[in-house]
Length: 238
Length: 297
Image 1: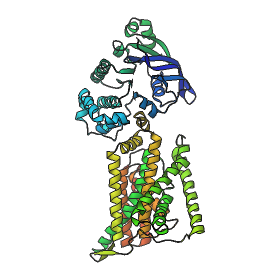
Image 2 (image 1 turned 180 degrees about the vertical axis):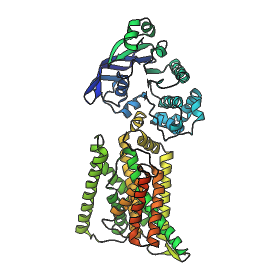
Image 3 (image 1 turned 30 degrees about the vertical axis):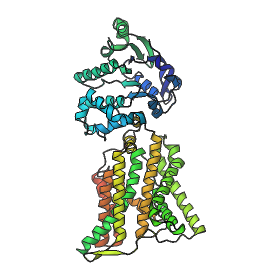
Image 4 (image 1 turned 135 degrees about the vertical axis):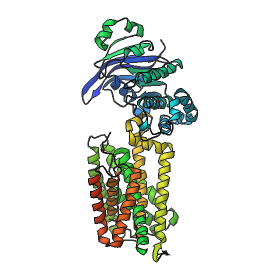
């Protein structure tokens, strides 16, 4: 496997003295798609919040491209190339689709390449072009998710972290979202995907880390998970 | 007809001053839920900075307002570092910052009085940027050129501000922080810099409001308090954090005040505004243009 672009080692974190993550360790090699799989409320989002700098870990290290990023401000981490597409999208509701996309390219380098890159985003996500002057708050759930993905892609990050991209969407929209993820994988992008639905990622991810009560309880490839009914039954309800 | 012209002229003048004063408060509230109670003294300081530039230093009048804006901006940034910087991560920031800036405003006001008493005198000065009584006649009502300047300056600054917020990268970042500061951080926005810049920008505008007010009255150390109170009423009537709403509310309040002052008596102007606000808040508790709840994210 390629050298790790992102490395999380012995990470502990929580809220107001309550520990949520316990001794989390995993690598994300460059150009790979790694998945954090597990039921809701078991720390996956907290883990992404730590990596992106929205939450400070209480112990452990996070290294990106050889540089320690744990304890850095979120705005500095994103400037290093770690981009998060959060659960619930976190769009700017009172801004147009175009302005939301522009915010994705806020950093200097991305801003300089915006006009060129936004056309690529419109090709990848044509619905956004149709809605370009529409306020983000007026979009449907699927469109919002596409906007969040487009905005994340425009930041020009080296690693894209997607937090439950299928959450709350209709099956047909989930299919579209996963087509986009497959495209990104084909392009060689490094992706860290958080998901609770095993069937969606079994064929897609190089490596799956099963997160349960804030700990990685199992890891392996998609085929290994598929052939391990005990793990599926115990942690994912079959 | 004369009454009508008088109401329009006075109403637009009040509205212009209230709008400019309120816009600053709205910007700061919108960006990080801070009600800056030192806004009034910053308006006062704006008038004194212009006075200092033109009267005491004898420098060209044309640069007095930009100088006052610059100094106002620096005072705004200072307000951030003295107060908000230490409290912004606290749970009750919205409440504690009101108390902190109220105290800071009082200290600044006392400091200004002390300085003026010792160095000069604290009684009113004439604002050198005022054109005085020079006027032209509409119907039979004299309209001073100073009022035209106030309307033009307020309109110009508000349009510039709107273009800045709408069209520039940093303006967009300010709007982004106001809507979701965590999301803005994930885009690479240095949120703290936005807070400082917003306070500086609001204070620069407050400086101009102070010049406007002193150009139709006088420069004196307590002049900003009443204007700040009216600006607060404007933003409460509009709904906290609503920029466009604040402009409409400023127009409404300015016109109501002028109507009552012209048709009834001067002293009932403020009473009329308060009655209007009470009725409006009974009708819509979150303000005319406000959302049903106001909560810090």
